[in-house]
Length: 318
Image (tube, rainbow, N blue to C red; front, side):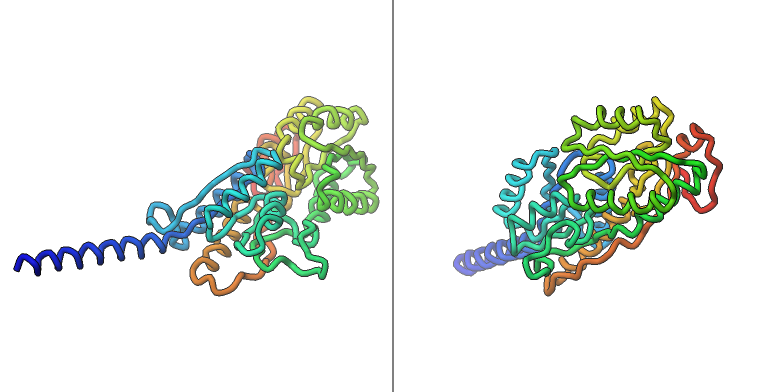
């Protein structure tokens, strides 16, 4: 009887150990790579997390582990983070925004990478020599089609506008292309465009002041990483000189821009989270890259009152 009890205890212990190991294997690990600290990007991250939760993946349910890292705008740090996530054998790397996606794709050709707050792979320079998308890349991207509508808001809200200011980082291909598109739109609308090129956020204040000295009537905030990182500086300078800020990023309206037509950042992240969850449920195939679904017209109520803009029915006021 004694030997039977010992054998039974041994069997139970082995069974429990096996079950515990089995449960551990069900825990999905996601590495989330943010390029820098930014309120707009934070909205996308929050949406991504919420989508995973709604789809049944959460740390509270013990079936998800998220390793979150922020490179704080430092490229060598971003590379180190990618190496770390790869060493942790994560099931998926979520990237936010473009520069994080590029870093992850450069470091790994096998771990699935889910991108958000990024342009198409072509605009981001992610296609291989045969013009193919990396096999491990999926997620949600935006085109530049929305820029035309965003610029045309200038005439809708400021019918007499003649001058516009803009800054951009020349190292970001999508920003360079966006500026060219805005130039074309401004020419059609009869608006003179003043440009300022920056290489990092420390240059923003001086360049914006220079544009304001040219008596610009409005400023257009591009979906540019340097603009995101230094938006409060742009806002402060424009507010002092009563220059309203138009943009194509709804997230920047929440931070003080007058109005925007563009992707809702939270919903962009949420859509990417759904794509990630769908992949994690079976892992049989990397999903196709999809275009962002939800664009919105938004207006900042405080800025609307500051500039005496009437309430527009098709805009969401915040």
